[in-house]
Image (cartoon, rainbow over all chains, first blue to last red; front, top):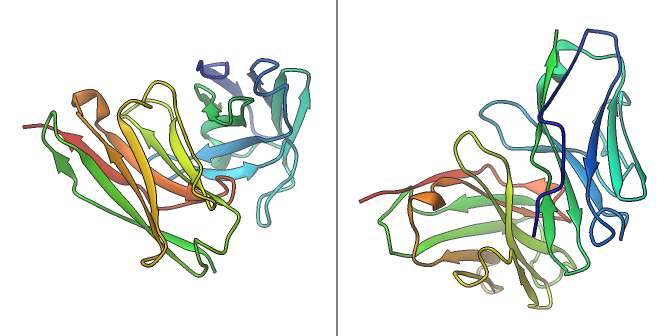
Length: 110
Length: 115
């Protein structure tokens, strides 16, 4: 199975908003509302920040939001902060009853 | 509170079997309708889903690893395990266990494949 397609890198200035896309197919992202997003700081385990497309776990900042349109899911971070600098991964359930990650996006806060 | 604790060797020889165990505390594997899964991350690279086992015993594996992977559950010990056979240097990675539809992850352990 192929990985979901994410931009390799995105950047923004503090206070700005950025969006990271995650493009799959009708067999994964487009098939179910089981898309998650993870934030990974260097040397640490990934942390879920969005699950089931748009649900934010308790304790995750309201500045993180998720959405989906067709075969593409998106993560938006508003009011960028320096602490948001990290790698971000999308993750989706598939029609084959498997799961698949995106390739990851490195966010730089300038 | 559900927690996962991963254990296993940090060094495995090429062609041998990598075996890791994830111990579950705070809930019963047999009584939870969760996926119990494994993910890995090679140094400097992205995340790769390895596979999972459902509480019913149904397994699902990454097609690229399916021929070499076995995931099992030991309900008596409240643990689930990963066996990856015939390993090569390409299997060197940080390995994670996870559950609750991958919303809860263990701490991860680095496994190096080397003679």
